[in-house]
Amino acid sequence: MKTVLITGASRGIGLEFVRQYSEDGWRVLACARQASPGLENLAKKGEVRILPLDVADRNQIASLGKALFGQNFDLLLNNAGIYPESDSGGFGKTDYDDWMKAFAVNSMAPLLLAETLVPMLRKGGTIATVTSKMGSLADNTSGGSYLYRTSKAAANMVMKNLALDLAPRGLISVALHPGWVKTDMGGPHALIGVEESVSGMKRVLDRITLADSGKFVGFDGIEVPW
Ligand SMILES: NC(=O)c1ccc[n+]([C@@H]2O[C@H](COP(=O)([O-])OP(=O)(O)OC[C@H]3O[C@@H](n4cnc5c(N)ncnc54)[C@H](OP(=O)(O)O)[C@@H]3O)[C@@H](O)[C@H]2O)c1
Image (cartoon, rainbow, N blue to C red):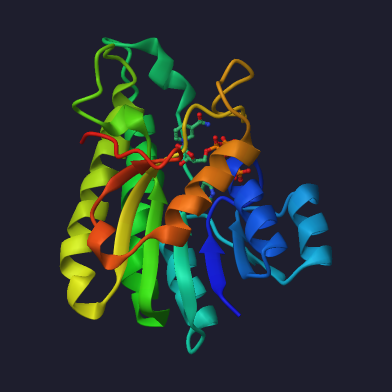
């Protein structure tokens, strides 16, 4: 049975990843700061184990590593992310404490989780991080959102680096753009729902090979410029 570990599984895109992988017969290690009713419902129906995890807390990541020691999985899905409210203030309104929080969750956690959990990833396994087109330098034509953009750009670089560093171990690393999705973060005016976003990213992950490692790919399968 294939196993996936998903962070930020309480709601939005993360919860939908849990639903779809579980429905496909995968064993799901669903990590959340706090289990939501939606996640608890999914745990009643499928092979879903809920694990407490605040990805900004290094001690909790170390404890997770210990709790999972000796188990193997196929896919590490770094999904947890934040867009700090203060980020909409624009130039001159930067909250530097919030910037550090954005880096802890969006950029540092994916690397910390990879460093902790790589020994448990099966050969041919994948580390995928849901970053964002907003972290693309090439795609930035509107400015603003300094905290989110820079923390996702850093996450993109982490994923590119992991592709190079982990290739000798036969592991794949990929950055994913989920589209503009109707969630608490994406808001009601977003272009697509979680079902479409997640089924698209799953299709990308299903087909991925070592030759794709180090790519930045959208939910529609189209590569995103760095
Ligand atoms: N929605 C979009 O349009 C869009 C576009 C591009 C990229 N993304 C990315 O897609 C990912 C999922 O976003 P979403 O739209 O589903 O956002 P969301 O609805 O705001 O959900 C965010 C998820 O991340 C979790 N999270 C936040 N901080 C965490 C922490 N310190 N530790 C553990 N979990 C934490 C939240 O858990 P709690 O319930 O505990 O807060 C929640 O499960 C994020 O990385 C986001 O940046 C989204």
